[in-house]
Image (cartoon, rainbow, N blue to C red; front, side, top):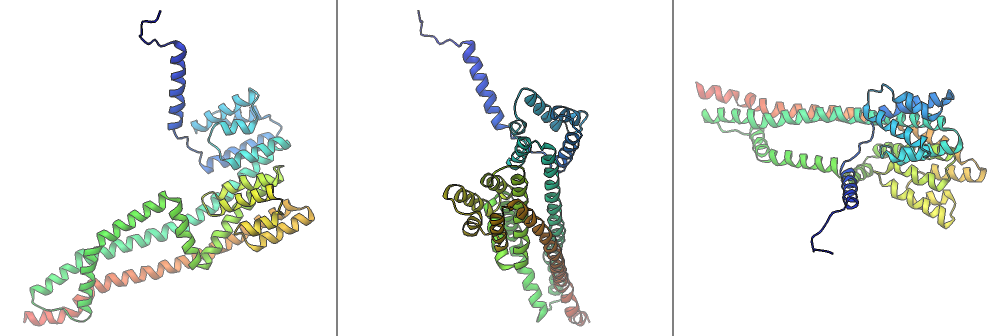
Length: 377
């Protein structure tokens, strides 16, 4: 007979604990491994598999004594899942530490019996991506630091040094004229505006860092104004997408799925939705692959042309490989040109800022020196 009080059964407690554990797992954000660590991992697995070591032992041997404890634990989990009958790509997917492109290529390698090749190509793909990221960082980071330091020096000169010069002239009752008056006006404007300008730059930097939409908008505007930047960015995007698609397709993944998975390699760019839409049209509407690229994406005409040749000659994988290599070479050339132009612009801006500091700080002293001497006589 019920007395109206509630009771908690062991089953309900267990269910509540399971729900709490699930919520906790959702709150904990699992971090992806660094690309450098992944390159070593995939190279090691590829070499062991090529030496006829089975997948389970390869995972065990690589994980033993590994300094990266998180990776060692992940590999042990993958090994346990595969020994329990789970497919290798599902075991990798279950960890939530690998992207869809990696999972897709591992699946293709497992299905085709060429898992060692899949891991080797993954390592090569990540190495190329890491190289270009380092080149971009090198081209942008140092100039950015130099410009920031020089702007800081300009602000300090206008806020701290120039007012002292102006005060000296006021003490001797000399009125600034000509370039001296202009220099003092610039100093007054800088003193009034610099906190707002610095704050605005910081806010814009935070928005660029956090917002993908803002980054894409700024990149699109810059690409529309600077042809070299547009060529560099499009070469990098197309190289990344086409090389990934070639890896997937050459390992047995059909074209539409290869396009969808490869699109994730450029997910943070406007090219991503275009390629996804083209894949849908190719799969469901029956349009040729070259026409899907031509109508629904912003890829170069060369890509469309070579895809058309590949369809007619049944050599799409070869055309994809050729295009990926071509855009990799173009990206290297554009990167060198971009770095040289950027270095010249940084030098020009540095000279301008140094001149501004000199003119704003020392020119008033040189111009007003004679008047100050006369007033002291």
